[in-house]
Image 1 (cartoon, rainbow, N blue to C red):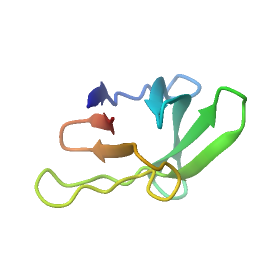
Image 2 (cartoon, one colour):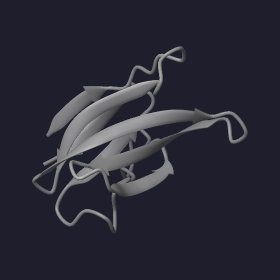
Image 3 (cartoon, rainbow, N blue to C red):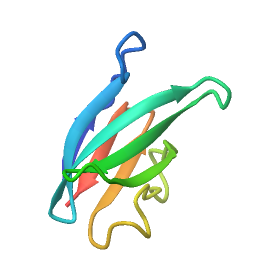
Length: 92
């Protein structure tokens, strides 16, 4: 399990970016603020430049069932955002 601090910078373009490994492949995770929706959206881009996923950054509660943001896209890896701690959790 890998924990990544989600600390977006509103003056940067994009506000947040990090590399992560999902299903054994390296992906660039970028997050952008959507003014109209008043929430972050994220994009996962593969090394070949193809977008694997673009979706809202939905937060999981500290207690209860975590929300896997890559369900249906990745077969073995999970990606969970926990807003209370400001972390992204990648497993495995």
